[in-house]
Image (cartoon, rainbow, N blue to C red; front, side):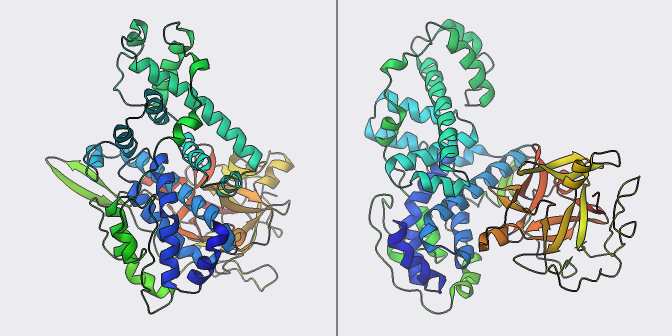
Length: 523
């Protein structure tokens, strides 16, 4: 399918609005099914799909291989799903979100439930769909991709390219997902049994009835040793056969209307129903202007979706009234940002920047000196530097293998530890106004799958973009935040044992976790 649409990709990159609309119409059903299954029919599916398509249109001119459009689209969708889940998790801890509003776009059940009731599918099909809701979030995403692979709309190579893994590694992760899915099928069958096992009733005392990992583990401990609840796996129909008999999710008319209002779909496609299975008629060209010129108005268009976009906002209960709280929008790049020039270019240290201690910039016995930007500026000067966490002083950005994390580095650390806590700052590979970090072994810091890691320069435009970060002022004086060049609203942040690319939630805690003090080199 990618080869068939490569011509549309090239035309859309050249500013052909009609080609862009036809391209989006062709891939919308695939995108909707991936996001819809991964988010288990959550009402935010429409918003995540729209946000994914807006990013696709924004970044399309930079796609170097038109034939890889499908896997590239899926990789963007996975990033948006991850960002959405993370924002939901953070926001849930600060506010009371009206989850009941999830039923507003479709007053009935979730899409999977509606499909099941309409087709009168078997108990086992119902159970396998319900079991998907018991999976961990990452496994739900893998189930969504595996579903599409089974349907023939994605290949294993597509999955590997979209996730940044090898095909063999994808196979391992899919196998782990399937094991958890089988476990979840057993749980669903045991909970739906009539009569239910009395010991299982004792196990679920206090359960609120919603799928959760902690209850999956508790119930699984019971079912493994219970002769009543133990599964008869030999009589089970394989999950892949059951999933293929569940109809694909149809793209809602409200979403197609919203995309048409934004100019992302042709009018004929917006009026089509059953977009998941029906061919989409090509609309007339919107005419006039290049791709980016026409997007200015389209990005500001009001969505036709019946809910306020929960990607950038959420409904909050405040007394008896419901109000809307918007997520902070990505801040424009500050005019005072200073970045290192490219290696080999003249590189004077900006005024107000303190030079590292010692003639070679090496650490003193009490640690490397702070490199403080002048008031109002955010700078990462060129040369060997170390990045100290504002949230965890004495912990520095370092790495183990390919993945980055925070680690303790001091004068008593080994030479290897000090070396891993030191990076050479050069001008941004994709933008000389920004910066790129090179490790001692020649690899570069880049983000991939929303995580910061070390990678060898493969010469691609995507690599240069992923390895370029633009500094802005951090949480405290003299600190910086590092914004991804190709995702300006996302910054490097320490959480869950690694350095991740996240969108800010506006909290003080997030600001501290995403801020670093630029120090002189440890090595």
